[in-house]
Every structure is written in structure tokens, then in C-alpha cells.
Amino acid sequence: MISEPGLEATEIRRAALRLFADRGYRATTMADVGAAVGVRGPSLYRHVRSKQDLLVAVMVETMEALLDAQRAAAGAGGGPVLRLRRMVEAHVRYHAGHRDQAFVGNREIGNLEQPARDRILAMRAAYERTLRGVIEEGRDAGVFAVEHPRLASYSILDMGIGVAAWFRPDGPHSVEQVAYTYADQAIRMLSPAPPER
Image (tube, rainbow, N blue to C red; front, top):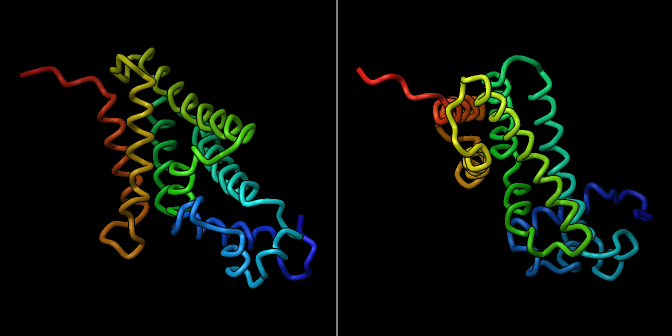
């Protein structure tokens, strides 16, 4: 894919990611990507086949990172509450620290062509299914009170995705504070209500 010395695939993907996040996929041209990495538009085709390939690479990389972080969190052991906490914290950390990836990953899914679109949707479904599995396990163990685990997992995932829209590293809360607070909220949302006094 890369043939020019000094120009790396990761550099091209980073430039494309920034442009897709700032301008949107449709408004970004290959000439824009080339200018961002110091290569004339037509010459860029010696390094990448198409703008679509760049979008696919960005989205696959994003989903692989999310799935890896989720697997590490889920695989660290403990009961469903602890595993849910770790998974939510990992989800929030990623979205706080990778705003461009979050915007592109959620906004540009409709611009993916087949079969890449189905590949990304399958990765997203696997990500949700793993979270839902922990919620169902907690429900079956009596530590979570939830009637619709799929809706609960969607709610938790949407909460974390939303962090990308407002989080700023120089803001009043650290990534860890936000991750811990969101995990607390997710657990409270699923926990049985205390008995009335």
C-alpha cells in the first residue's frame, strides 16, 4: 500500500481521520488528504487505493481498539458488577481519549460500502453482545434488576459515546473521574431498588 519512503500508512490514516472528523467523509477529498500529508492528490493513489479504503481502515482500527479494551476489562476476572464496572470505564476512557474516532465511527457508518459495512456492524454487534452478556449474568445472579438487557446495554453504550462530545482534557474532570462516575451510574441504573422505608 505504501511505496514512498518516509510516508507511512498510519500517517495517511491519521490525516484522513482528522479530516473526516472535521469536515465529514463526503466533504473530504483525496486531494485534501494528500495536502495534509504533503503529497499531491493524484500521487496519493500510489499509497492508498481510495478514500473508502481510508474510511474502512479508520473504522476497523477503532472497533479493534474498543474490542481489545473490552476483552481486557471483561477478562480481568471478578463477578458481573466488577466486570461491568471495568467495561464501562474502558468504554468511557476510549471515547474521552479518541474523540475523532468516536465521531467518525458513529457518524460515517452510512458511508461505508459493502462488505465493509457488514464487517463493522458485526464488530459493533459483538461489542454490544459482550456487554449485554455481563448484564444478563448479573440479572441471573440477582445483582442486577433489569427487564430488557439489550436496552440497558444500549443505554450504557450511548452514555459513554456521548462523552466524546463534551470531554476536554483541560476541563474540570479527569478521564479517570469521568470513567469511574459513569461506571457508578451504570451500576446504579441496573441495581435493584432499595426497599421503601
